[in-house]
Each structure stands twice: as C-alpha cells, then as structure tokens.
Image 1 (cartoon, one colour):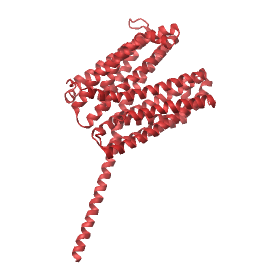
Image 2 (cartoon, helix red, strand yellow):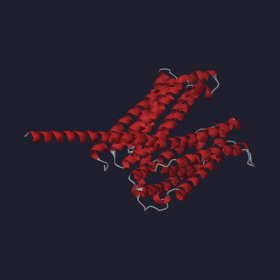
Image 3 (spheres, one colour):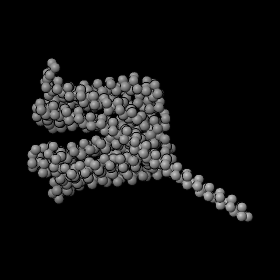
Image 4 (cartoon, helix red, strand yellow):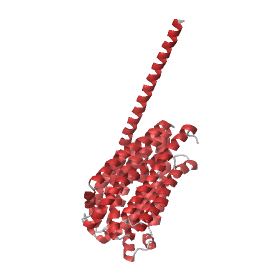
Length: 478
C-alpha cells in the first residue's frame, strides 16, 4: 500500500517537473522569436528607411538646384511636382500587392510563386505607368484645368511632360525592388538609391545650369535628370533581379500561366493601398488650401510643420514596409503566434523611434524652426507647431505602421475605410471647428491632425487584435 502511494507521488513529481521544463522551454522559444523578430525588423527596416531618405534627398537636391537657378522655375517645379508626386504615390499604392503576396509566398517556401507574382506585376506596372504618362503628357491642358495663370501653366506643363516620360520606369523599379524586399533582400534597392543620389547631383548641375556642353534648362533640366535616373534605376534593377540575383531559385524568367484570379489578387491588395494614399494625400491637400485661407504666414508655418512630420513619417514608413514583409511571411506560414509577435514588435519598435523624435521636437523646437526660416515672426509661429509634432509623429507613425501590418495580413477593405473616415469625417470638420470657429488658427489644424491620427491608430490596433482572434478561431481558409 505504502509503495503504491510512494510510486504514484513520485510519478506526480516527475510529471510536474516535465510540465515545468516544457513551460520553461516554450518561454525561451517565445523570447527567442521576439528577439529574432526585432532583429529581422531592424535588418529590413534600415535599408528601406535609407532608400526612402535617399528618395527624399533627391527631391531636396532638385529643389535646391532649381531654387538657386530661378524663383520662377522653382514655382514651375513645385506645381508640376505636386501633381507628379500625387499620381506616382497612388500608382505605387496600386502595386502594393507585389510585396504583400511575394512575402506570403516566401513565408510558405513557395519561391517559384514569388517569381510568378513578380512576372504578373511587371505588365501591371507598365500599364499603370503608361496610363499616367498619357494623362500627364497633355500637361498644359491639365494645368489649365487647375486654373493656373497662362505663364505658370506653360512653364509647369513642360516640367510635368518630362516627369511623365519617366513614370513607367519609376514603377518598374518600384515593383522589382518590392519583390526583393518581399524576399527579405532590401539592400540592392538601398544601394541603387544612394548611387542615384550621386548621379542626381551631377545631372542637375549639368542640365539645370548648362554645364558639360548641355544648355541651361532650369526646372525642365531637373525633370530631365529625374527621368534619366529612373531609366538607369529600372535597367539596373532589371539586371540585378533577372541576371545577377538568385533568378533560378525564383524562376523569374519563367512566364506564368494566364490566371485572372491571381491577377485580381495582386490588384485587390493595391486598390486599398491606393485608396488610403489618395484619401490621405487628398485630405492634406485640402488642409494646405485651408491653411492658405489663414494667410501667407500661417501657410508658411503649416508647410514647415508638414515637412518636419513628413521626415519622421519616412522612418515609420520603413518600419511599416519591413513589418508588412514579416507579417506576409507569418501569414504565409499560417502562424497566428508569429503574426502577433510581428504586429506587437512593430508597435514597440516604431514607438521607440517616434518617442526619440518626439523628445527631439520638444527639446529644441526653436532650432528646428530656425533651420527652415530666418523670419523671426514665422519662427515664433512655427515653434508651437513643432512641439505639437511631438504628438503627431507618435500617432501618425503608428497608424502608418499598423495599416502596413494589416496589409501584410491581407486585410485591406476595412482598414482603408476606417483610415479614410478618420481623415475625412474627423480631421477636416475639426480643422473647420478649431481653426475657423474657435480661432485657434494653424495650431487648430495641427490639433485636428493629432486627434484624427489618434483615432485611426486606435481603430487599426483594435482591428489587428480582431484579425488575430479570427484567424485563431476560424483558421486561414476563409
């Protein structure tokens, strides 16, 4: 009797020890997965951020060269560049399906499927690029539609026409670099953008001012430099993807079979991204117009605030792109646990970067404002806006990351509707209330933007939690 009791208690002790060891092992595995996710996010985000900053650097160089050439040409470049950037941003949104579906296939170990996604995306990118080129080539007509004065319409139309010629090449480069990012190889895109920045300086020097035997072309010359660089980038990326890189593994030379369903999948992801970008860019364009109603000084202060927040937004965009890739891979593996780790890691990773930026804005707002202008009155008006940016960057950056996380999980429609509603039905009415009814001026615009981004952030986080719960209970076949 005693031996039986002893034997049973001994078994219970051994069972408890085994359960404790299993819990400890699972805890170590979970911690290792989190650390690996942080490492992968960092590894993917840094090259993407550098590439995005490189693109910003090219735009900045163009502005400096043209601004020093002629104030009038700078105006032409500004108007043409606004339209060109809007069209190109929406087009890149349409092509977001490339990176998402590539990452899904990569996560499942279906490397040939990654190549098929690329091959289906290239004709789509060319089609979108040529449509935009056809829309923009009758550029004087477009400028007249926007009600521009005759001299401005003619000058900016020439710039827009040159930009239009490079759009198909820009989208080709974007699709191929998205393919590399989706297969966790962002370095080639980063290196090419950095090299493009060097070429851009010499090309602007030659075409804007008329050196090395070229005529001085001002803003048109800067557009020629941009278009030339896009051709070089597209050709260079083609060589990397199709000739140098692991093209055999991914089967990039193999023409995929015709499949309308797969083509629709690629496009359906992009529709949501394009709608989100269109609504966001459109809303900020409306805010820009409303800022002009408050006077030239208010418009200048708002422009500086927007530029400051945009530079931070690039950092969040890099984290968002990396998170979309890792989320796509996790979803491809059909692992809810890894999806949660990716989503919450992205939140913490981005929040740490945004908090650092926020502290910088709060600690030296006067210095930041003085970088943009020497006008003491404008500096005084801009300082409180830079301080408000400390809040704006946290919420705006977080909603950018979360919408990318959801996009990687192939959740498109509801996040797009929710984000659009925040900008249209919350931000714009609040701007009208704060800025014009309560007379807070341009500061009211900044507060309205913070509230709208905060609402979008909460909505997107809640949506992510619900998506994870749905996959955990219903599976991935829905």
